[in-house]
Image (cartoon, rainbow, N blue to C red):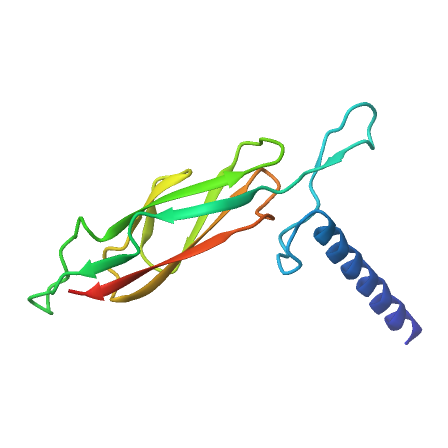
Length: 156
């Protein structure tokens, strides 16, 4: 019984200290993937510097409403529509100027391309509202601010 209580207390202390550390370096307390990331410092080992997480500062969509063309034959799949997409431009900043990897999470469709400028192809989805969230990784995980936008697809 005493051993179980001791283990519980140790785990509780470690979880609390990890959450406090994540908040101290700018990580969301709900982002469990965010762990402290140290960069080599100057001089001897032990002088590492904490990485400062990058933030997404803007996420722009060239269109936020798309029209789904009326489908004549319900038994045939809809044809590819060149207009059923939106161009996405992401602006992000990293305090240390690290190279960034852009990570997109979408609720429908697919992302075409990589980097700060991509195309969000929504061919094959039904009418409705879809979201895109972008986060950036500087080699230490996505710990900074993410941004979410939405696109509504309406039946023509």
